[in-house]
Amino acid sequence: MSDRVQQFTEFRKRMNERILEHDNQVVRRFFALDTQTYKDGALPLKTKELLGLVASLVLRCDDCVSYHVAQCKDAGVTRDEFFETFSVGLVVGGSIVIPHLRRAVDFLDQLEARDGAAAED
Image (cartoon, rainbow, N blue to C red; front, side, top):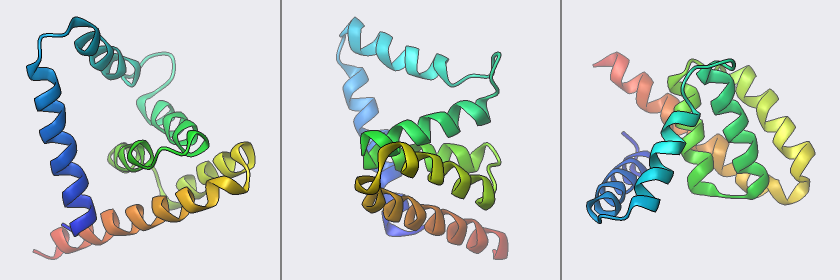
């Protein structure tokens, strides 16, 4: 696993556990709401994750972009689907999205490299 992917995954897991240790119902309910939102429903999970990716690009949240890139990849999003989704985020958000798009593609490249390395083992 690449350093960036591994660091992101481990930090997110560790901090989510740390945050949820605290008995705060608002935080717990928000985390639960987020989990519920991305389940299959009238819209499939894959579509919801792609929507989350566009929103994250437009809001310029690199952690959110990385998370949704990983979730989209797990949901079976193809590279062509990623780039069509990136194009929507870019058109909606404008040129200020470009640095986040660069990091999104870099993160996707690293996920694909990790998967390629795992397949060779």
